[in-house]
Image (cartoon, rainbow, N blue to C red):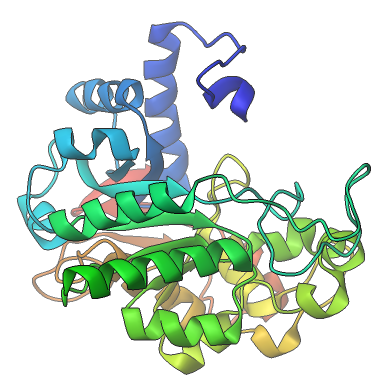
Length: 353
């Protein structure tokens, strides 16, 4: 990842015309999975210009909300508050929406920042190895202080429970320091090893959890056997616990880590079955309707567009999909097999199978 994205990246990128074409291809791919609104979760200045150019060429079929690296926030988040940014709307299906910050790595890479050691520590590490932070406390506080004062929404990549703790601790401190009472809906992206006591505090702050439930299928067995061990692995992405506490949550897939297959996300939230067939945390399963709400109603709420998206109702945008089967009626183990027949964006078909 850092070989391409890092400041001293050593990987050669493709030609500009190939990149622009790829943006259009990606938009069509997302549409084929039924996605009418898409997040770009880390936008640099070059990527911002690329997306803006692709948008002006009419290559975006879906709405794209951008979460900018902190250095760009003051330049492009010109409206005060996420409601104002949402109300201003999209230009050629593109708009800035907030700030993105990274606090740790990933459990499967054993770089997530945990409060307890990894079940099997990586070769060469001490027995108490539990990952590490990627930002200083002072930097995190500074970014969050700036976001709260400017009323910018922040999305924070935090997989390990210690990274989640840092987010909650710093954000709560900034709220107390500034006396802010505005609900800016800060989002914990991945939120994979969140604890119950942390969910309680997230609820008080108004934080949203965005779970990557595909972790259960793709890496659940590895989590169980090596990363977290049986007990902690069974509690990853605890959607049921969030639901019971009234913590709003969404489901995402972090493409290209996994394909943007929304019905696959719904399937994994409902079944929580690993690639080897092991059910990982049966008590954290949710119903089909609850999972569908997470990728529609809750998704619109997360980006302050609940007044115009997320459900089919008079006065809202005509953004919806036609599925080949009713997910409420098929056997739950077949949810991931349901195909999108057609995707409609603002009343216009943007994909047809």
